[in-house]
Length: 97
Image 1 (cartoon, one colour):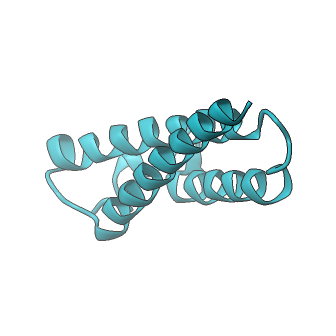
Image 2 (cartoon, helix red, strand yellow):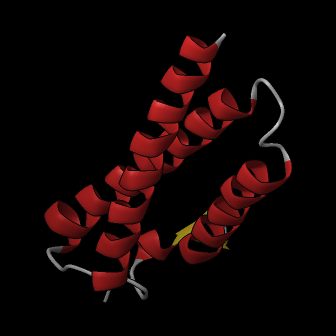
């Protein structure tokens, strides 16, 4: 039901593809730019954007479509953990300076 709803695309792009690209962006930032001074802040900003999008989609699932998607809820849990961990990383990197 969720994948076939009108909310499964944003501007003609599948929401699942947006999520995969977002996770790939966060992964590449964490792997390739981890030695850069501003990387933790960019990681936090990216994960906050992903978390906001995931919360919006979870709201749509629960209160508009009245169905739940296990993969969507798993993604929400994952982006929540990434956001919390990147927040700790920002605090650690500022304390280290």
